[in-house]
Image (cartoon, rainbow, N blue to C red; front, side, top):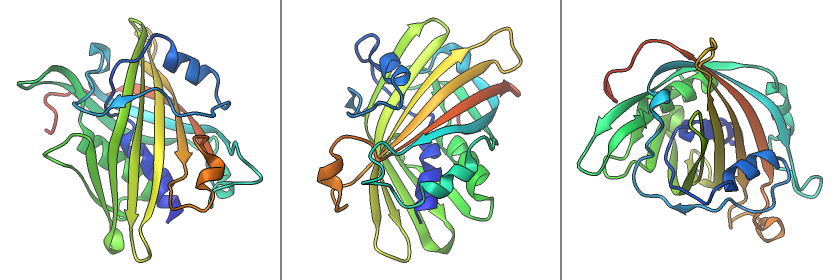
Length: 251
């Protein structure tokens, strides 16, 4: 079960954010793995508007390049050691971003259901993932249906963005995960912070560094010992290669 929870944090890798003060997210990325607090985020509301240069369809190569257990050996999450087998083992999947206009905003957003399904199947296999749905009442809630009546519900609770330069874009978000399967539901809190860089003159038109932090939930016996320090950190290198132009989100 922990393996499913770990890989499915990827489903929310292309979601939403709100502005923070200059440099806060850049500093956070640069100080990895010395993280002892959660990032400064605002309450989640509408979709994130991405920069224009991310619009289109992309083939993404994701490579886990580092993992750290900041509170080891006192606190180490189950499955952390076995995840070392995935270091430097690239996983590929397609994602897309397209311009959308509503009464509340106009701009480039992620196709969350499409991206989430492709990412989940890339990590877990086509047969393991039945569907990924976004709550029509809220872009911040996503439900992943798995085989054997397993369900992962992810709800974004906080987010932020930062634009250090015209070709750079950083997002951070925290979400609650509830995994329901044959046993008692498992809850945890996950942060995903991603720093994108646009490379107009290279084959991989976008590169990114992504860090996923796992925090204990109040149900865990070590919750008060850990506080706001993550119990596991995973750092990825993302390489985006252009495919074909997207038309509209959801097509």
